[in-house]
Length: 385
Image 1: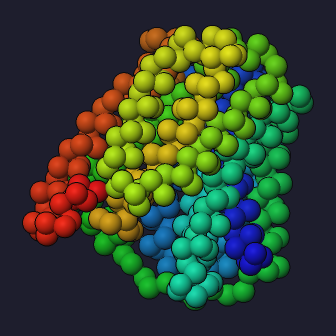
Image 2: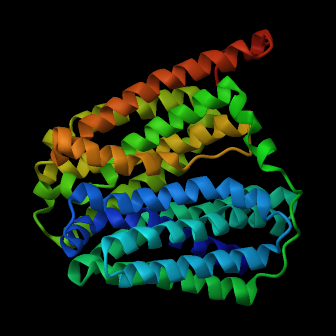
C-alpha cells in the first residue's frame, strides 16, 4: 500500500479515536473532576462542535496554504491539545483543550481526504479515499476500545496521552513521507455552503443529523448505559466497544454492495428501522450480557450501515457538504436524557430520534423524486434510489 495514504489513514485513526474514546472513560473523568456524567460527556461535545464548525471555514480560508504544512500544523495542534487534556488541572481547562483538539482535527481531516484524491491517478481515487476513511472507521473497532482499556486499567489521562501518541506517529509520517500535494481550486465559504439552500440537501442532512445524534447519544454514555452488563470489568467494556466497531465496519462495507443492488432508499429505511427497534429495547437488553452482546452488534451495524447510503445520496446532491454535528449534539441531548429518563433508558431517546429520521428520510426521497425528470420505462424501478 502507498505509505503516503497509510500516514493519512493513521491521522484519521487518531482523530476518530479522539472522537469516540471519551465514551469509554466517562466515569473516570467524572470522578477525577468531581462533575456529573452528563457534564463529563460535554468533552465530546466541545471537540465535535469545534471540528464541525471549523472544518469548512479552514478549508476555505487556507486554500492557498501548502497541504503538507496544513497537515503538519493540524497534527501538531491536535497532539499538543490532547497532551493538555491529559495534564488539565481542572474541568474548564480540559474543555478548552478539547476545543483546540477539534481545531487540529478540522485542519487535518478535510485536508487528508482531499490530498488522498490528489496523490493518485484519477482511476484510483476511490480506492485512495477508502483507505484514508478506513482509518476513521477502524478507530471505533480498535482505537477507542484500546483507549478505554488503558483508562480503565490505569488512568483516563493515559488514554489522552495514547491519542496524542497516535497523532504524533501520523505527524512524523506526514513529515517524512508526504511530498508536496497540488493545491485544490479555491472555493469560497459562501459557495461551499450554497447547497444548504436546496431543500433536498437540507432534508438529507437532517436525516444524517438525527440518525447520528440518536446513535451517539447512546454511544457517548456507553459505559453507563451498559454498566449492568459490564459489571465494572474493563476488559469486557473494551471487548464490547470492539464488537460495536467491528459490526459497524462490516456493515459499512456491505451497505455499498446493497446500494448497487437495491438502491440507497431501501438501505436507509432498513437501517433506520432496525436502529429504532434495537435502541428502544436497550433498557431491557442492556441489563444482561447475553442480551447486550447482540443488541450492541445490531446497533453498531445499523448505525454505521446508515452512513454510506446517506453519503451516497448527499454526494449526488452536493459533494462539498458534510456534517459532524450529530456527534456534537449527542453529548448535550444525552446529558439531558440522563436527567429525564436515566442513563439506562437513553436507548429510548435514540429510538425516538431514529424514528424521526425515518420520516425525514422519506420526505427527502419524495422531494428528490419530484425534482427529477420523468424516468424512462426501464428506469422506473430505480426512480427512488
